Image (cartoon, rainbow, N blue to C red; front, side):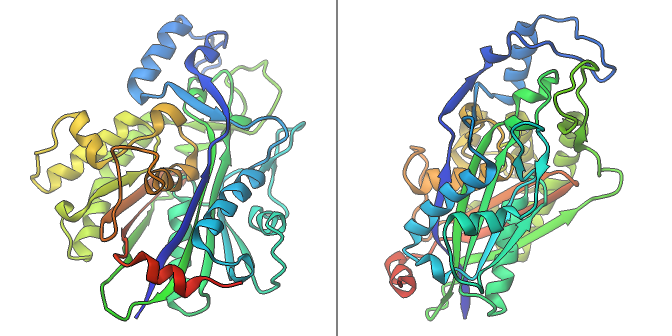
Length: 377
């Protein structure tokens, strides 16, 4: 039986660290276009208490979304030991493409995947580049699409990248600007013959898209400050609606995924959830535990053991949060968190649309066997 196995991962975190005091000189406005009558210290402290974000990463001038996607892709290819010309598809998850440095408008043509292929200098004409525009769940959805292609025997090796430069599309007069950051992640997914029937790799997944009343919970718009004219493309978020939607829909979906795979929450070693808002992520886990009548993880410290968090230092980099988190753990850069051969993890995300998805993945026990079968070039 063919299994879809992660043979390599990589990520890129920009070097520029933006701490909360960066926003002390900002002028924040409300939805009515009126300046908020509170001190920036009060606004920042309240924000930090809810989200836990103390720092976020921004790209340096001259870097583009496709650049950082390529950096993460190179690392994933190197980790996989798979020759780049053996990649059959490149699936690139993002939302804004490359941002023009003067007009600050989204540049989506040619596609980010095509640009990544070009920057990787892949000559294979049969390597097809696809873009995945799916909100923050884009990388997981890219993995889902890749699995379907591998299972259909249309491909053997697929590169899935995720990248975003949200620092280029935030409204400096919106408090939500403090949430967003830049970053990139990548993985190589390969078709591996599972001769021992160990049920490794991608086990099960589910996607749910509520695109009716929820459609504009995350969108774009002009600045909240009517005098700000730098860009008309600014990310706009209805945080309260997203929070309510997440707590209603995500826990039930994750339990459905586990039920369909005949697994229990106790079988999961780690839950890697989109790093959107710490308060929301903890609330999602609490709801999921409640569905199992499983209350042994009560405090946030205990919950952090099963659900590692990066948002405190890296902020919300949209599609890049889950693969970045995964690669950091696999590279041993998030102690005490670790993933061992044979471990089963649950990955989940939600974002613009509203779209949500989740995936169960089991790491093979015999890693060396898979690396040798895919090494070429």
